Length: 119
Image 1: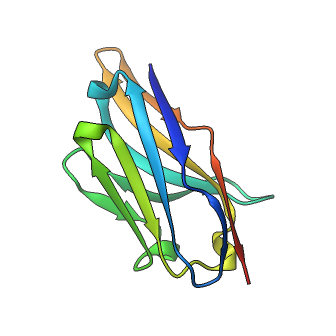
Image 2: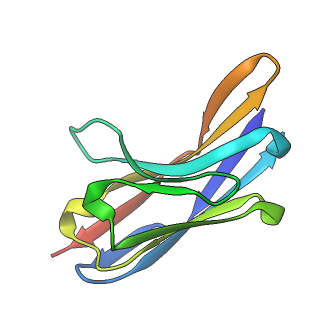
């Protein structure tokens, strides 16, 4: 099992910045990809960004150039730096970790943290 705890959400004005953190515990050695998804009211959960253990990143087109994902493996922590925030970035942001074992893969989720961007 892997447990994820997020921090860093809140209220910010358009154009502002925030940084999210997500700390993993438990069977962290089994984690490969970590990332962030978000879910706005009335919408499906969508990918924001991912990062592999060796640092390869992937971003949704809507956040490219504004958000940056990073990871410190020794701390089992992933970060999401968000710049130039827009009202449409308002959502609950969820950290995820994809872990693998001899029995297959599992995706774990954090509890979510609210980000509200005011215009």
